[in-house]
Image (tube, rainbow over all chains, first blue to last red; front, side, top):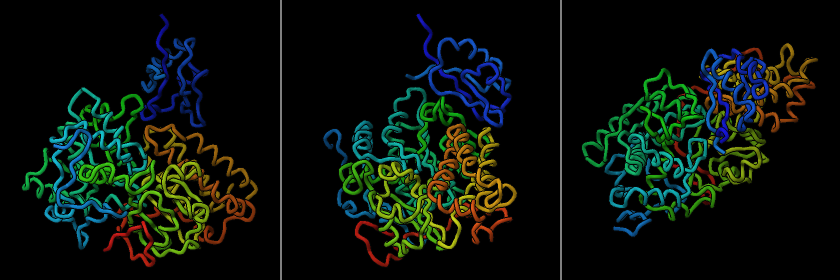
Length: 71
Length: 466
């Protein structure tokens, strides 16, 4: 059974723009001109799931997480 | 007992037949209507327990009532979302904080028709089975609202005692998650990140929470009395009922009038004795709303279904027309600066994006190095659009979205004037303001005047008498 579709979300009140997530998941997250993440809103392609998990764990502010996508 | 799905009519009290509803029951001399006068005017609130909870939700659905705080969300859907949560007894909040400087209608209702607002809060509490009800109002209203609640307590008419919580004086204090954060004791009423857990699921104390604008609750109180069919007897199919507008034209202070949904700006100007020619630029919705040339929307019904396709919004019922002698871009820059200052300072897009947006807008309006009229000025519109796109939708709340919407709409609405600034430099009215830090356009305490003296009485547009 495949894993449920997930989305990546960033809590902008927690984020301080360290940029770790954009570094680890550039396919899905880019930094704006001030270094804050711009995250795509669609469901994350399955092949990026492991990179997303790494980005979640690496965030110094614990601002990023994955949630189940509501289709 | 009434048949399922209908609501008791209020014995002996006829529902208002015209377009003046909420303003038909205002206290005199600037104070509240007493409870006795309120009940004489509107009848006693039917006991919701008698008709059952789902019956009122059905009625609310049929009424088509939407939120008057600016988001225009269907009230019944919001109430149902709260009712559907099983964890914890809900909390209901009447949101009268009205941080929007150009709006005064909520304070008017809280000041002069508080019983109608509290009736609505009690209907919500009963319908949702809430164990806590809160009136969230600015400090200026807290004292008299507390007195009004004591009056109700003595009369023993409410199923539970509402409490009064003072809202901080800031623009974002009325944002739903800022309200619940403040009620939870958080500092300063700052918005929270709610994309994962919305407040209808986990709000105050982690309980399902309904935060509803006070005007919306006042309408609900009338629906509880007179029913959905009556509610729909004025307004449009998609926007039934009436709405309070806070109208500021030229140098005259803001006035609150009640209009049936579907009324045009022309009829509003006519009711208030404003010549349409004196309102060449109009901001609709609020500081996070949209600018349009006054002439373009003169005959457009002021309802979302007509305004949104034109890139405009009804928002919280704000209609603001600066004096015709002023520079619209200077007004835009002043409001952009205000919105920057009023950001909660929590999210990157607000902390970095809004100052950049305010600076670029000020350069367009007032000139200066890199500004309008200079060699590098030509790139300003593109840069402003880019900044709008970069903050839009990226905060915990919609504050940056509103700033982006307001600025973007101005560039589209006043394209000719933008070109003039770029070619020649700031126009004389803007130049006269240049160099000064744009003042907050108005202090948060708006002086509210009910109605006005309609010179030509327009069918369907009602103003409250003073």
